[in-house]
Length: 390
Image (cartoon, rainbow, N blue to C red; front, top):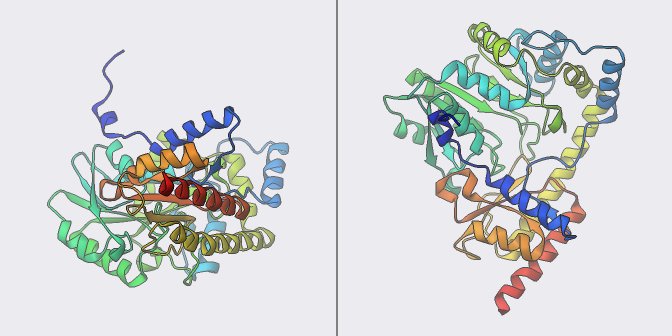
């Protein structure tokens, strides 16, 4: 086999998936496993969305769309920003993509040059740093603890900006922590990056799942902000692989050219289906499901604390809890393996999300039923009691 490109060496394995494979082996052996590792809603697309996909297939609406997406869908997304956030976004600035991953890939392809450094918090979603590495840039991970809500601050951006820094990549709410950047802090970060002549990319794929504050998008801070969003999380369409990108008007031709060459277009069937996401009955269902996620969060956070975990920051969005397990173990990776093997519960160690919390934190996804959460807590109670007695 010929030698692979050197950039492959900078892409780490995804430990979440390794645990999922271990769990699958146990399930094949007949074990009951409760999955709270992978961040995927247990809800699926609403009936109106499924019906719209069926109609599109029956009507033969399966040819390529333009690289930027169906005009009707771009207009519907713009209308959603107006309705929910009070923002007037030109649909021409919206590019429909094959999931948020494709949106991040396009943004990094357009902005990251070899050797460029991009600031992001540690912990953060591992694929974000790998998108930067894919274009021979360097993700500069800045340790961000509970005192910063596990998020970058303007002060940290100023302190770590160097001659090779080109921008910041943020996520609000964040995976793995479920925490958002306060509006004033985000405004200060944007002003700092603007002063340095850099770019600001904000991943808002969990923005629809914000529980404790009024809806807010970074797009309100200026037309130069690049925002990523997705139909996967709030809209419950993970496997449909559909997202979008909002970019400054001047960037649209470059993004369109890249999209034409790298993807041609996002799934046409998924795009037609997504139009039904904005129907009143679909939006009402999404809000009901959001309330259910909030109910689960309000159950699992105190339950984790009772088990001995420390939850230093209550998540205000997404469907994750980032919990300090250092009072229970000095090795989060081994602890998650033990919890899987002995309790049948899948949680994720901090190993994937950055070195600063690799060994002392675990991530829990509460995107599963309340019954599963209650049973998981019971199993973990038994597990930790047995550990204390051994």
